[in-house]
Image (cartoon, rainbow, N blue to C red; front, side):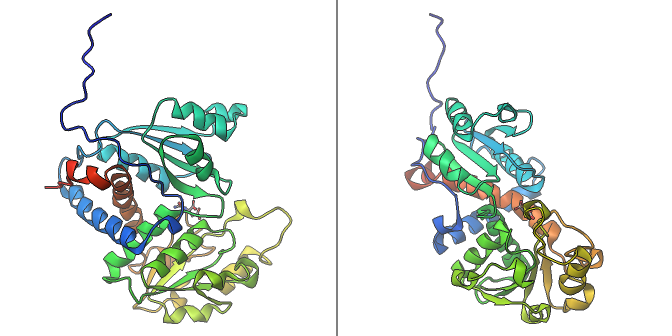
Length: 328
Ligand code: NCD
């Protein structure tokens, strides 16, 4: 037998207890504040010439994406790399998913490589829970159908706190296609966790009945956005609208009645959008490109917040002391 030196390097922290981030309901207010504060600390690394930190060296993070993504996948991959983890990305096209492999078999296959974290995006509600059951990895939900997108909500809170200096007492109007939006569901819950209020605004066909039970207000009048500190614009999710079902008479009419135009935004308000934007549909290009828009800030926050989520999952409990967060 060849003599291969296999001892762990000194100081290697033990694997922390398994936790997941599947939904905002998995978090307490304290968890949210800790993640946002970690993200703030990590943001200082962005000012350095060398941006990589050794924090998650030797950890393996798999990104399993069954739906298209630009921002979420790019920022998760970069977040993992900036923390020195090894990363692997699998998209449904080009993998054996193309050949009809089930999510269960794909999860079992990946688990055989013993990854520390699996980040999954999937069109079916509950797919991340299934992966959490089938594997030993920490699982992060990067969007499951119209259900949840918890890291988007966290990066939105981070962006709001950064721009407005507080979250407690903030009024956020969430406008548009709430019915098909996992972003809206996660955001409303996250806002109420930190003491902010949300008002859902849109046509009755695109606001789910009984949604007030999530702890938000509802209005079918676009003028109701005037009292908000933040106007959060949702994308018209045409890919989730069943064919034949008319949710709005026409996109042109939607834009006329619900589109966020310069006339509808007050000077003291900020405007957010998770991307990708349908310019000229839910948001007027003049608003998207104005100083009021925080869209680029949201993308930037996505990187540090996802770094913070990975750090938090992989270094909690007794291990935290073994992996100090040094961004000097
Ligand atoms: C969102 C998503 O995929 O749910 N996008 C994102 O993650 N930045 C919102 C959307 O697609 O409209």
